[in-house]
Image 1 (spheres, helix red, strand yellow):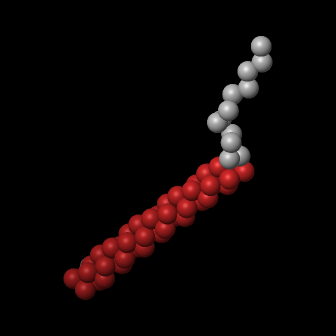
Image 2 (tube, one colour):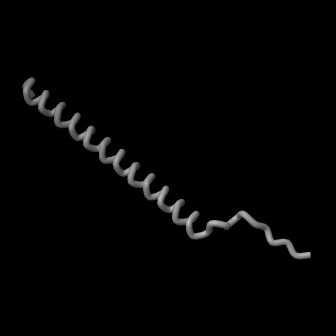
Image 3 (cartoon, rainbow, N blue to C red):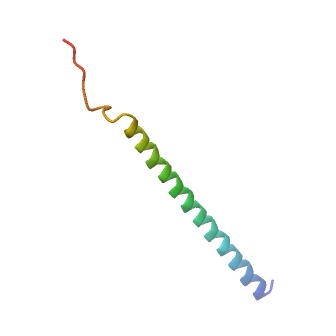
Length: 57
């Protein structure tokens, strides 16, 4: 394998690794945003949930 082909192969591998890392970061950010939205929906739908205790004697 000549030097030029080896350099192109190394650059290609580096590019693919960078693309993979970027896509993983985007997926993690997307999941984090979804989790925040779920928490907001839960808190908005039950604003007093867990704030009172019913006691009968």
